Every structure is written in C-alpha cells, then in structure tokens.
Length: 243
Length: 243
Image (cartoon, rainbow over all chains, first blue to last red; front, side, top):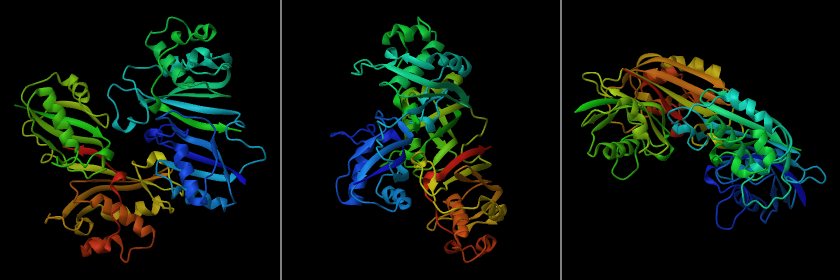
C-alpha cells in the first residue's frame, strides 16, 4: 500500500460537494471511481475538508491508498483521462510518513467572490454571488480585521452543527475590489460549518445597515442570530491548503 | 410599434446558439419568451448574427418591435427578472430610424480563447479550448497578420455553406498570451460560417507543423482542405458589434 498525496482542482457547480454520498454525485465518489478504473480495485481516499454542494476548489488535497506505485509524473494525465472535465488532478506524489489529508492540515485559505454591479454577468452565474447594491471593499476590509486572531466563532457556525469546540484562529482576512468583483479572503487553522459564508454575509449585512451589533460584539456574544446572512455556495472557493 | 435596440450578454454553454429553433433551446427563443411575458403578446426580434451552439457573447445586439414604450432605464432589470441567469440584458434604447440589428451592422470583433497548459483547468471547461501542446503567441500573432485586409476567405468557410460572396474585410487581427490563455482577436466587416474558428484552428495547425502551405497561399488558393482544423465552439466569444 502506497499513500499518495493528490493535488486537484474542481468546479463544484455540478457536484454535491466533496464528500461521498450514496444518492448524489460527489467529487470524492467521482475521483474514487477513476482510481478504481485505473488500479482495478477499490482505493480508499480522504479529502482535506468537506465542501458543500456548489462550492469550488481552485486547490484541494486528498490522499489515496494505492495498491501499487505509478510513474507519478504521468499520474495526473492518466487520472484526468478518466475524470470529467470539471475535475483536474494537478500533481501527485508519495505522501510523507504519517501524512493524512485532513488531520495533517495546518490551515486553509478560502476566497469568497461577490459580483457587485447593478446588472448581473452571465459568466459569473455559477462563479460568484450576484449582489447588486454597491459595496465598499475598503469598509468591509476594515471590518474583516475583527476576525483576525484566536476567537470563539460560535456565532459564525451554521445552526445544527454538532461541533462543540468552536475556537479557531484566523491568521489573515482581507477584502478587495477587482473590477466588478469584491473578494473576501480568509486564512485560518480551521473553519466551522458555513463559517466563511457567514463571515462574508455578515460583512455584507453590515454594509446594508442590517447588523444590530458590531462584529467584535457578535463574536463575543456567540449568537448566530446576531450575525448576517449565509451567502450562497457558488461564490466560495478553497484556494490554498497548508501542511 | 417601437423598435428598441437591446444590448445583451450570454453564456452560450446551455443554448443551441442564438437563432430560434423549433426543437432546441435558443437564446433568441428564450428572449422572445421573456418579452412575450412582459408585453403580453408576441414580439418580433432579430439578432446581429447567428452564433453556434456553445458559442458565447460578451456583447450582442438584437432589436425588438415592441407594442408600446417602456421606461428604458428599467427595461434591463424587468427583462432580466424573466430570463435565466445565463442571459443578461445590459441596456435598451429606442432604435435610430431604419435600424436593423443585422443589416445595419458595420462590423464585429470576435475573440477565441485557448487554454494552453499541460493540465486542464476545470474552470475553463466551457470557456476555452483546452490545447496542451505549447503555442507561441508571438508566432501566431505574426501569422495572423495575413488575415488583415480585403480577401476572399472561401478557404475559411465551413463546407456546405450556401454563401457565394466570400469576400470579407478584416480590419485587425492579434494574438496574445494572458497567463495560461492564448487569445486570438479579430475584427472585420463580416464573417463567413465558422470563419473565426477555422482561422484560430489554422494558426494552431501551423504551430504544429500541419500546414502544407502558408496562410497567404491558403487564402489565395481558396481551398478549405488546405486550412486547419475547426476549433470547438466553447472558446469563441462575440466581443463587440459596430454600427
């Protein structure tokens, strides 16, 4: 058995997230099927995180326990030939001793893209959240600095999540405008369920004057109902994964 | 009856081109349906050009003969509310006297996008032609200059087309690399069926050493079989329309 680290990228539009499911098409299920075809047997895999339906990954890491070695430089093209065009293996290499795609992960960077013009752009339909009222990226950037540091992010977790330790460290947060798109980027050691989408939604809700409290107060009160909307999945991209 | 000039944009991935068809979903049919809902009656329309299935338009012009006036600044949002997200009306204004979206058109700019890396990008799947062997944008740019001027482009027309006057004027042609994408842009007074896709394919075929003649010779010999491949529709964008 050889554990291989697989770096990939996928357009999440047509998938019900990374995680394998019995009744829906997932990225993991699709990758496992390609590996099964290539190696002739079931291949165990694990991803660096779950992603929700419609969420994208510019960069994602999984590991796979293969029954035998493979010329690694040819691995991406061999697997890509068996995958749909919406998933691409970028690189593969033997995993370091003790490596686990999820448990060895030290941090991640997510990006949330908001298409912020009065009239929508058909090419951003499944690639960004269309929000037509004007946003100030500068003001959002200032507000986002409140996320930086070690905090209990219970207010920024989808209700119903079973996670009990809601303390996470955010290393950096920024908002900038690139033409018609406002981009929120956040790097942290881990993220709660829907955390990035609620953070982005809270920055937008604040701009619209819809928050009754400041973001530092919302963090300290640990109350989901004080934070903003959960913005939709198609604007969210996993960008980087650190080990 | 009021003739209105409608400027729009669409992602062609899910459409069988602009032109209305009885048995397939077209952009024109979808726009006509939205106008019928808004005005309560059938609205005649005409587009600036046909586009093929899967071809995109960053910018497209059609005219529509409406039964009554409308507050034009509100027209885009009103129609967009009735259209799928893959089509957006950008602007609408009363058409000048004698205006016809197709017959008044003086020229167009098309762009053809080639994703030129060894490994594909899932986000370019329906937005560019994936071509993994290295291309020199500089050499392609030099070759593309042969298209500029008034020429008989019979060699660059899909066989089976019924057009008999195959003389067109190309005002400008350029190729440049933007990161991983090689872009071919061409502006002319009119284009034959598949002309831009055969031009782009011929520039690629030349790079691969697959042409037996130079591009000026292919033009003057008027023989489709001497030109290169017809590259696929998803890389093609209508960019500008001149009146």
